[in-house]
Amino acid sequence: TANVKLYRKMYAGKWNTLCVPFAMTSEQLKATFGNDVVVEKLSSVTYDEATDTYKMTFEDITASGVEAYKPYIIKPSAAGQIYDIPSVSVRGLNNMTLDYYTTLTENTVIDDGNTMKLTMVGSPTLNYVESEEDFNAYFLQDDKFYRAVSGTPILSYGLRCWFKASSLSGTPSEIGQATIIHDDGTTTDIRVINGVGTDNTNARIYDLQGRQVKIMKKGLYITNGKKLIKK
Image (cartoon, rainbow, N blue to C red; front, top):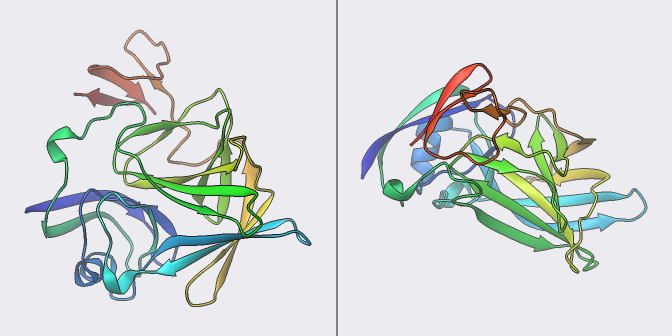
């Protein structure tokens, strides 16, 4: 076990995504993110043809705690940016790298009409994400879904999650409108934006010669005017 500092800016009363490389009990969640914290996992998706809306249902798992490397949404009751978490067992710490598409875990559900597969992807490490030939990629932030355009990989910092939408035949699916249904019956209407525009995903990375890179090898890089070291 180890005492961990978790660097992840979150706002009280706002839904965020979270994926950590260690399990946390309900008591640890409350001690870290506030007594009224709520953590949910994706449980199902349905399609309302009349309103052209995908309804994503999430299940409250706060009482049972979170598993390592699993994708969740979390609503802290206490805001923070640096969290001290004592006595957790970090899985795979020695093998964690910043390699391209590394350490991904998925939670997949299929809509009631058997037409779309929605996958919530989580990673505690840095990743490049883009829509590909077999799925569209979406990020959730501030009650908005941002679709990552194909051919323009965007940077997703660690401890976060994103979504893949595809047909059962393996082609990209479009999400026109979306609603999240929480375990307590409340809903969050999601505005869908086609393009890149979130504060944690729009950073490009350059080498010291000013060339944009998509895959980082060992060395020093620049992103958002800051130095980034790939070990």
